[in-house]
Length: 406
Image (cartoon, rainbow, N blue to C red; front, top):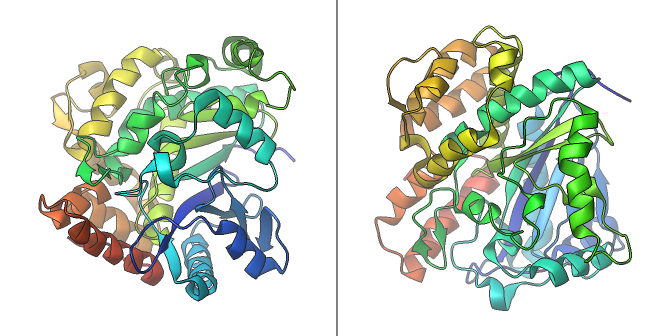
């Protein structure tokens, strides 16, 4: 069934499994799914939420079981599922850990690809790209799926999403630490994301999708070159172009939805859903053309937007935006940091969020992105024991569905 703009949503959250004793990743998602289901399966329906495996065996995904129009109660649903997963994992001295990257996992020695259903696809990916890098095996994110009914709705939604993508890491960055050190990027996940398919660059492009605003052009500009580029590698023809497209927002014409993928996972589901709701309200504002016309939104080349995005993944909310044309979208006439732009957007749409969502967004705008708060809590001490202490507190925040205070 095809839905209209903002009629329903699909949300996906990914978490890593870690051992309680030493916080190392524990590749037992198959054990978790078996305990829940009785037998091993790659997807388990749990009422309104579905659990499933990912590329690597230590990451589990929970997502809305089909489209939903109720964002207000979704955080509680996800929080209940977190508790249930943690209860099942307790038998193995394991629990879920939030944030978009594990702070000291060695992907070269600790990566275990999912060995069960779909393993043929994962093995092929591994053969082409070597999935042992941080950008493949050490990433957790939230995906937001937004529907469009036809080309006219796709045009509006794709134009708005492209314009907003560069700012999202300024709200959601949560991956500052890899290999037990500060990476220099508050959103290191997106830094690796840019190049982890360098063998076939067309799969990721410039992360910001190209200026294509209907299905036919999307196939010509994005899908067909991907299909051509993968042919020498995919000799058994098992990879789908929808699956291969790795831009920061991907258009799924198989289900008439755009999936936003540049959002780092937060410390708890309430923060994730608050960010999702906030992004959705800003996209509604852009689609309405109250701020800026559709023609102007479509005029942005991906290279221009990528330059802004590339700065924001480094410094998140403290990034200074100097592009006057971009600032004009938000009625700002002087250089400001990303946090100021989000505050401006919150003034415009914050009233449409639930009281709980408002509390979470105000907390982030006041205290900084989760990446900023993690770095503050670490106090420049990247000894493993200190990292374990801070990330242990983050695991507690996930279990208790509360915000992380440095």
